[in-house]
Image (cartoon, rainbow, N blue to C red; front, side, top):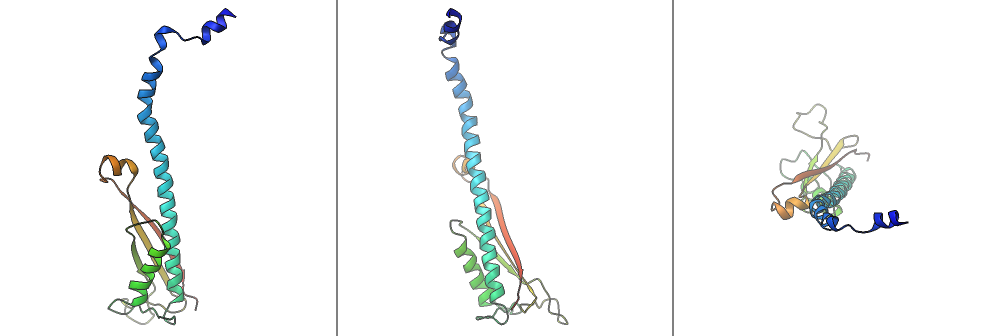
Length: 161
């Protein structure tokens, strides 16, 4: 019994060891914990951007050349559906994600017309890409936001009506 009691009692020379170990490991543990939070935030933000781009693409296929209002990618100005409505739909669907950049593209060319003319008719594709900057927590608080990552989400669908 005396050996067991001696094993579990504090020794005088070990009292400061746990405090030193805690002081050495605390920064590493905080870095790991904030890293896990940042990875979770980045995954959530990228999924939100993908969902928002998908919603913008759905809006684009509903409002093709025959939609109301119709999309006209051949317009040299800025068509209301392509330059105004689709980015607004994407930004509205990306709740909680700031500073979103939206790129809308109709990648199919109209047959028999110059390559500069894009197609927004049936069986033509609509592509929407949403991107936003992501600043990890250590960079935001320790480096004043010097390090950032650009997260992207995209979608491409075919106009069916």
